Amino acid sequence: MERWVVAAKRADFQGIAERFQIDPVIARLIRNRDVVGDGQIREYLWGGLEDLHDPTQMKDMEKAAGILEEKIREGKQIRIIGDYDIDGIMSAYILLTGLRKLGAKADIRIPDRIADGYGLNENLVRQAKEDGADTILTCDNGIAALDQIRLAKELGMTVVVTDHHEVPYENLEDGTRVFRVPGADAVVNPKQKDCGYPFRGLCGGAVAWKLLQVMLKRFGHPDGEIYDWLEFAAIATVGDVMDLQGENRILVKEGLKRLHHTRNLGLQELIRVQGLEPDQVSAYHIGFVIGPCLNASGRLDTAERSLALLLAENREEAARLAGDLKALNESRKEMTRQGEEKAVRMVEESDLKKDKVLVVYLPECHESLAGIIAGRLREHFHKPAIVLTKSEDGVKGSGRSIEAYSMYEELCRCRELFTKFGGHPMAAGLSMAGEEQVAELREKLNRLTTLTEDDFVEKVTIDVPMPVSYITKRLISQIQLLEPFGKGNTKPLFAQKGLKVLSCRIFGKNRNVAKLQMEDPGGYRMDAVYFGDAESFARFAEEHPVLSVTYYPTVNVWNGRENLQITIQNYC
Image (tube, rainbow, N blue to C red; front, side):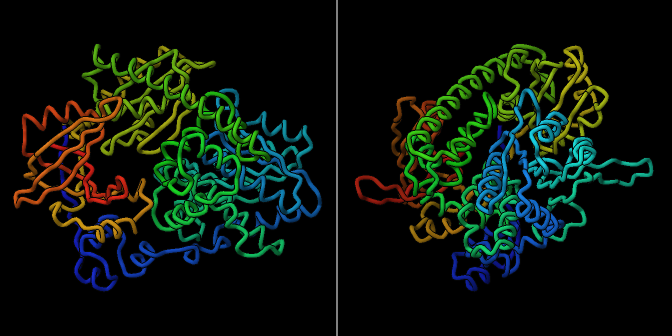
């Protein structure tokens, strides 16, 4: 069930169109993405590297760079500690290769998802000390490691934190919120309350990139050299599902241009093994093709494999590692498919289907897949979903939510059931001592929730109701100015009623593509394509030969000929 709504944000669309020489439809799309004011619109349409902010505006940035410069010049050992996801891997690569280029004695440890858990832990701190490290440099983690950093300081080590996660806090009895920043020698994180950096939405890889930019300058390197690492910051930004707004959008747009001509052998081979052309790689491919391969090593094996791919020094090694990661990701996809099928069946064949908040226990599921399966359950039932698995020390799980339900706040109301938990409104992770808490969590979340049936109706937001006869190649080329699309800058969605289906054919070895010709009420004909359950779509079109559709316009190229077509997203 879906509810279609039209975005109703207001502005002088004609005036914007005239000032920026764009179609009024494009002006509406820009306003729908909350880009307002001529300065923001200009940056959104044509922003480039010159619009990136000065990294020294970030709190402790100069301090961190000064500490690292001193350690490099003194020949001290620097231990970089990253994370096992794509953002952590890219952050680690940027810092490791960048600091080594400056002459640093630097090495790296990426925590093991199962053995170490997320981020800095006491074992990693003690191991760094035993290995002779003078300084710990974190990336994509560290802001919440108060006790671990205290231990490192007690052991006489220098600690520099680079991170982008929320600063931990405590609510006092009088209602005031006290933020707890770790006692590191420098903490670089734009989310700090007293940080003056103009853009807070950077990922860990982008924060690491900014630090390297300052370091290169300190060592007298040319300003443009930092762009050698830009594609890695772009991959981290898309892979960590950051909002593609402001500075992030520029990083990704410019980073993709460099990725199309990457000199990194590992990325070249990963793109090749996926059957992609380098100059066609988009934000979509990072999010759904390349990124999952890089993430798969941290899920099922060790993220050191993905880092090794990026560091590969010859094509043979790069090709072997890229093949391994692709195979690992295929295995991950199959395990996810089996877990999803089992979870959906459990809900549909039990009392769980009556619940407003789904809590599903899959003891045999690999704990790294719990979040993905929770996301699939949320999509299937459009309800908040938590998937729990058996772990070495009890039960672990991940949750994914819907807009109407702040998962982190709701879990806070059940905190006595957890040994550890954290997250934000749309996603969370948790640990519990044992299986007996599973039923308690399900009961309490469902007893306390205020969700109504209306909250479970999926909302489809249409940017512009637009007749297909309005589509031109010029309009499509202007829509492409708004790329890259992703979270926070969604692909535009148009809609039209009263489209008559003249013909419909099904293609694809999985029968998942429907190719149509449609006609509007004025007799204008348009080609269309639908991806998904094509047979179900074709049956519906046969029973309802006049459709309302939401769509995205494209230019289809076939045998050297170009013609306009729409890709149907929703129909009724």
